[in-house]
Image (cartoon, rainbow, N blue to C red; front, side, top):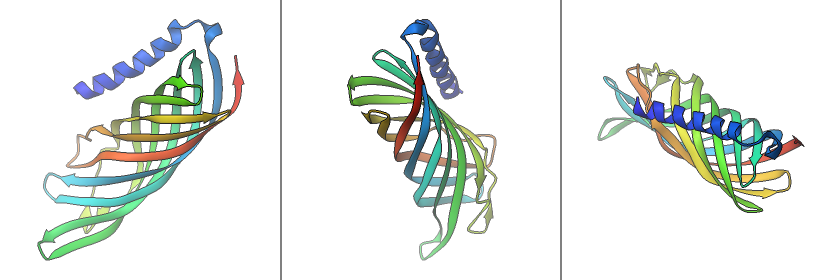
Length: 201
């Protein structure tokens, strides 16, 4: 619960940051975002054991708004992602079960960035994610996941005119609750592009 309140507080702070800056000092633009995520997951169950989900790779695509606030910026983004990997369950020392695990998500990261140089920025922020679809049978076990969770992203961006190249590290801060099953995603690496389509002062 503390983590959930922390995430909400960060989002409220971001909104306040937008409101306290004079409107004339803001620069608003919209654009497209696309990237590829690399991660490992672990599927845990109270009664059914666990499964390691390795080499999970997949694309993410979406759109963003960018609000420039002098040396800072805020970039709320909406993303749809699809990832796939191998789920491996250990039955005994000599027996393992393997199957393909797929998951698709809708994520809304709210990124706050700081311009260090004209072309280099550091950025970070919370995200809320909803699981759209997932493999509900993993190595013969029927899986029922809580679809909502919170997480975070942090990284750097290189900017060249309307093009931004970013690298993020992220993960789930609080695990899913309200279900016998949960997915732990302790870390993932995302690389991608932001393309600003237009601007308005």
